Image (cartoon, rainbow, N blue to C red):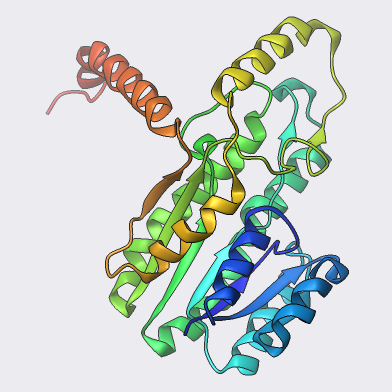
Length: 274
């Protein structure tokens, strides 16, 4: 039996993983800004579920929620940073407020929860942090550039984190989903005020997104996958969810390597005399 702490548990991946964990007999501290969305799960699973109202942007509240969950259940085994949203808009279109809000939730919210959990996991000499990234965390696409930037930041600090905490028996996994049938691109999304000049670029970006997500994944199918990851003796640092990300990543990384190699002579010359 494992004890989970899951942010953004009211819908999407967070809700599916909460249900998957509870159905097999685990216990879950599930956070949401609107706790009424968890009422049906509380009725169904009783005391195995601890609903916690939380806005991950509030650092003090993040630390308090993690501490409350650990005290309530006696330990933490799996900490899932799932809370986040997509900010649409060309880089030029984004306001300072929109950019800062995207990073507050997608980067700092995950960072604060991670920092809050680490003393508990270190003391236990065990635990597993699941960071919900995206195919957009290793590649980048027009009209969601600042979302990409936030997920790249999550990827970077999580890769460093894995090197730092492995000594204590703590595991880190970045989950990188493709397009799924969630409300990420619908009600949960935010949109910058558009500039007319970018309409042709926006239309092309929409076409490319439709091609990437021709058949959205089923969030329900991810429940079994995430359970397999947390039960693995040697879980991956990175794992794709969905059919399609590997081909995107392969093309992207092959392109990068080819360009770096093409400019290698200049790169070496820029080193200076040895």
